[in-house]
Length: 444
Ligand SMILES: N=C(N)NCCC[C@H](NC(=O)CCC(=O)O)C(=O)O
Image 1 (cartoon, rainbow, N blue to C red):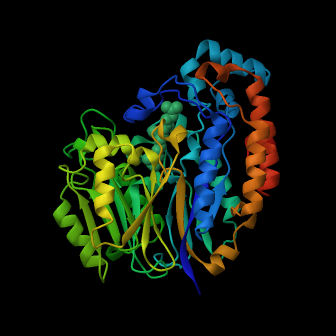
Image 2 (cartoon, rainbow, N blue to C red):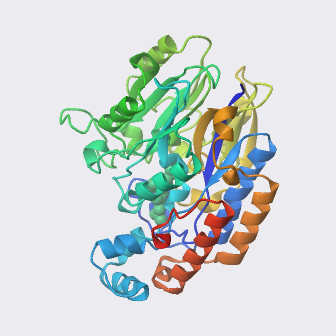
Image 3 (cartoon, helix red, strand yellow):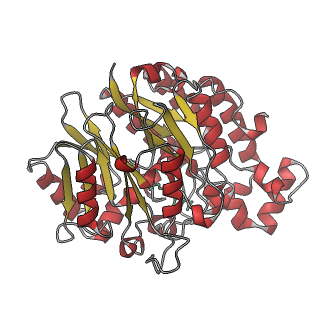
């Protein structure tokens, strides 16, 4: 039985745009109202995913969500034809319309938290879609995310799907972005590390002062219970509030783990020494904590370059490669650090750079764009095979993007009723390409 970690990248949707929706995410605020290129965004994402497939990784694609989300606009009282709903929302509630049009589901690190079958009591892979309650434009994702995950991982012998957590700030949950599974082998029981920004129900607990803590301890604990994880294979760590206040809005902006490597900034966590010791105690065997000092890479450089929003992949020879955005190569301090890292005696032996600038300009790097599912070949055989990115699907999806996507979109364009027709036509065709069935409200 082979075990490996598959990546499921979010396909960037036709309404990708820079709407300045994410307070606390400095890129989102700095690039608000820039001209977006949805076509380029989708093709950059496909390019990166295909490169990993060509490297021998198991790589899948997750479909975008229906945007503009007319179901939500109707739910909050806009009525009439689709065109009238859109026009009234544009006139009366432009900020809400922008939140109902975001392609933010592309960042599938926020789609769900996934516990592999080697870690769970019942030996099945557990999924809990993230409720993403901290941001309006993300809070409308979980229902459809759950539908899409169930359509792909549909075999209940191998996969369990939980409902997203209660939609209240006490249970703010941002999914796999704040969850890292460490292990010696993907198929052996590992340690699941949950990083949270605040203990919401404890008024005395420390928390960020300037930007929101989007993940709560209460949510992380609930996921660990739902996924039936043992005490001795879970660790809960608080994110350092001071880095959240400098733009680290998810843990995957300041740390990334793979197998027995945790690559993190020295300022990432509260109580670092004790927490790393706890991980070491719970995960038998050799473990590499690669701590990047502020003297080499400042928090500001980490947030600008996304050094830690990189993918750490294990190649067949056991060596690891870092998948980094080109922004890392363009930042002198970060580039110097990465060059030095390759000379150190760690499992990380190679760096590959990819241009994902359309996503980066909204605060999403290579690691945001993917959801990791450690699985074995029996579980892989049981999923919908039409989402797996091979040459044929890559060619078809690029042609699909060329046919349906605009190469220029501004927030003001979201009021164009033609965009509804373009998006629905595209998504309807996509569900046929990927054999997803009717996962969208407009198809029901
Ligand atoms: N780090 C991880 N895992 N994901 C990145 C998510 C970026 C996303 N940006 C946005 O939603 C910006 C949308 C806009 O402003 O148009 C967010 O803040 O939720």
